[in-house]
Structures are given as C-alpha cells and as structure tokens.
Length: 338
Image (cartoon, rainbow, N blue to C red; front, side, top):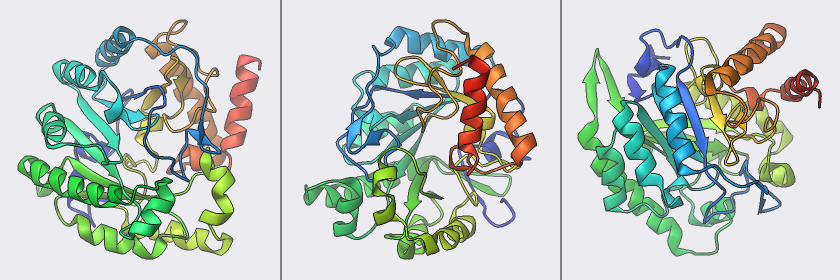
C-alpha cells in the first residue's frame, strides 16, 4: 500500500507499525445506543428504516472501565463508530477526554451534518482522528442515499467538511517520507455513485485520507439491495475499491490483508455484548458480554475463532463482507450451543 500512497491515517496499522502488521490487541470499538438524524439506505443498524431493539445500555462508568481494560491490554486506539451518529451522544466529550488521558487515539465516525467549529476543535485537540461518511457530490443522490428530505443538509455537510479540513490541516505531519493525516472521507460504493468515486478521491487531495468500500448486505442494505446494486457492477466496484481506496480496501486494512478492527480488535454493543465488528450485531450474544467476560478473555476467544475461519477460507479484507460470513456465524453458534 505505501509504495503507491504516501498518506497514512493516524491510528491505522500503517501508522502504528512500519510493516502495517499489528501484534495482538490494538482496537476497542464502542457502539452507543442508536441515535441518528439519517436513515441511510446502506445502514448496518437499521432494518426497513427502524433501529434494532437494544437492552438497557451500559453506563458511562462501564465504558470508562472498558477503556482502562483496553489500555491495560496495550490497546492503542478506541473507535467510536455509532451505532448511529456518535457526535449526538450526550457523553461523547467525557469519553474522548478519558481516551485521550489514557494515551490512546480516538477514531470517531460522523456524517458531518451536526459538526460545529467548537466540536471539531475539541476532537482535534484531544488526539481524535475523524472519519466522515460522504457518498455523493450530487445533492439529489446524497439526500436519496441518506434518507433525508432537508435540502439544506447537503450544503451544511459540505461546509462542515471544509471547516474540518481547515482545522485538521494544522495537524498534518511529515514522518519518514509519509504524510500523517487525521481526517478521512469514507465512501460506500454502489451502482448509484460508482461514477463519482474518482472525483471524491481527487477532492481529498494530500490532506484528507480516502477510503472506499463495497456495500455490505446487512441492515437496511438488505431491503434496498436491488435499488443500490446492479449484479453486473459488483466486480467493477471491487476493482474501483482496490484501485482508489488509499488502503486498497477498508480503513484499517493491514499488511496481512485483514481489517485490523476485526483481527486486532473487538467491538462492544450498546448493551455490552462483545462483537466481531462494530458494524454488525449478528455476533451479539456469541462472544460474551462485558458483565460475564473480561475484554481480554473475549478477545482471545474471538481471535481464535477468526483465525480458524481464515485458515479455512483464506484472508479477506472485511470479515462481515466475506461470502462465507454466515459460515463463521454458524460455527460461533455451535461453539456457544445456540
């Protein structure tokens, strides 16, 4: 990857390791109860535009304890992925301050619609890398993909991206011939926007990291699959991702060809279930819960199960997008006796 791209995103395998390969636990992924101002057609955590029903969410104190556990395991980054728009979460600043005080990096995902100058500055000042989801420069298509009726929101998103760019430009660094950046744009590629991917990448320039991924047939995307993806386009989209994504795939794709969020991390659902990845609830209840297993115990079990999967089916850039992901789930169910 680095031979073709000099940009590195802070907190990813190529930033944390010269080889792009990580050794052991690195990432804690935390999901908050679903709260979002979008109803994206691709959303992992909606089904027919309705959020998954969750049990009572874990407390902020429990989240703090998980951060401490992660640090004790030599964790290097905490990912705030959602489930919806994490910037809406009422305790977001307290959690980021806790992560920063621990010496770990925060990577937060956002649709950028509610970002303010004050909030972006807070993120930047507290060692936070910011990933913005953005799928189209067409206002009409953007609203269609995000399930919005507010025509002003597209303009607001572009203004907020420009503001984030201005603020985060101050933190761009040169290290060992590479450009270390802390702002990224993440594009999910479908048949509807595949012609725009190169344009979005060009927009990112040298100071914004660019990642693109194919659709995952999970959540809202299941019901919208036919409208989002023409069967003949999938191979073309896979090729576009490999060619244009700054990692040739997912944000944390490492030198071993695996997404490090999965191979070197573990997610936690709003209710405290450990997760293969924060972007699917399908493993909830199969890897233990924060109330009956430690972070270290669940991570060790999860890593062994995934290694068995890769030994059988070979490495893949994203486990939840693997055509054999259902086989992984079936084996997990057998392991826990479900």
